[in-house]
Image (cartoon, rainbow, N blue to C red):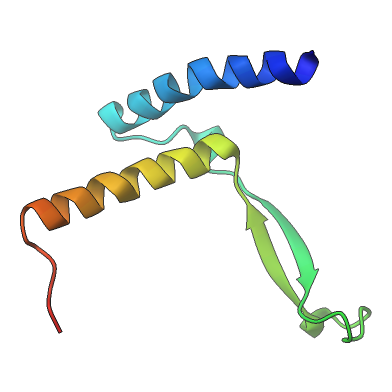
Length: 87
């Protein structure tokens, strides 16, 4: 029940937040924060050596959604106006 309520809440407010961000041209500062965590490059490597890790950043769902929306709009604009370079 709680999961369903949270999903419904996110489903209704996410487009509104994304549209407000795109219309204002700004990203809310609290959505720019990523959680960093180290990830072992290979399971066989020594977990005590820092050089065997690489950082992984996790953004919030809404940050990823805004990023995807901007990327889609940019690709559409580039293709529509024939702005892509051919190699």
